[in-house]
Image 1: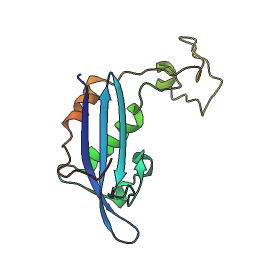
Image 2: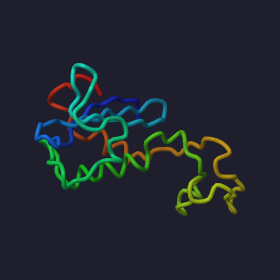
Image 3: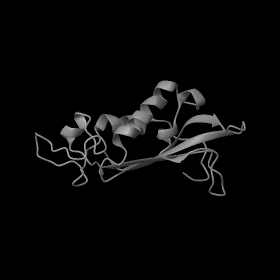
Image 4: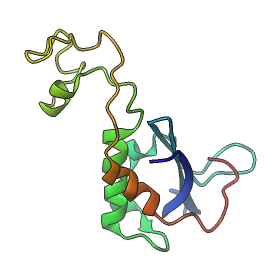
Length: 149
């Protein structure tokens, strides 16, 4: 697939003080590398009302409502894709270790019995499947432009 950059607005939320915000995610696919980052309620000052960066780590569907063109299933799908494919060129594990759920954190001494790779000894590239890229490009573009993402 060709390179692309896309800004989406999958959900809305409220701060603990009750202030409403929109969450934005920038998706970049360049030379086979995928990167996603987001911001909840970006402000022109450079601050934000919620999380920023890898916002999928703080996401709890119970605290948010889907934005126009989104539903709970598509938001959860986005978060799962984010976890699996973000920075696909910087994995500590080989594909075999990844498929078996072995991470550097869970077993920093692991040596793959199939290919002999020692986990964490280099950055490994895992290609993003075409069907995942198709899903990402099918998400609706944000109707409004954030102050920053």
